[in-house]
Image (cartoon, rainbow, N blue to C red; front, side, top):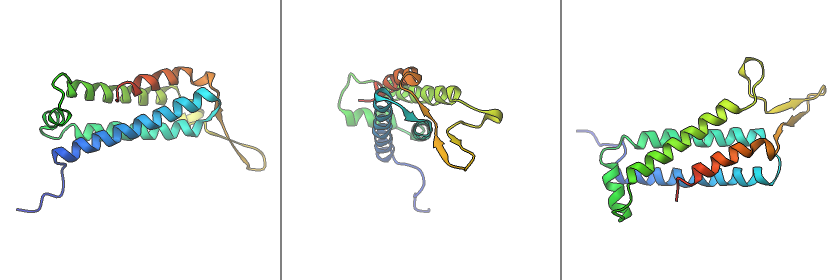
Length: 149
């Protein structure tokens, strides 16, 4: 029998899910705060989209770990916490946020995402979203953040 180097054990899967959740919440909070304070570059929203898409993928992968829900429940030591329901709510909110950004991001001909403008000298100017442009996104970010304690 070969050494089992592939596949996550339950403790690693739980640790991964929690670490990814913390990172995603920090990124969501940073974007929400920045967009509430003023203009943000469109590229920063693209970067957040990449973060949340990666988080959802990670959560979907760890969710296949056998015994994860029971292990997580035992580690949290809170019999009133429905860890599976909370995990699923977090993943669903993350996927909803990812899909909303993808559907609502300004696109040009051929579906190209509009993040930079160039002048006739080839100088690039990052395009921005105003705070008002991102009001709906802030609401969705806050909803996502509320799924993670």
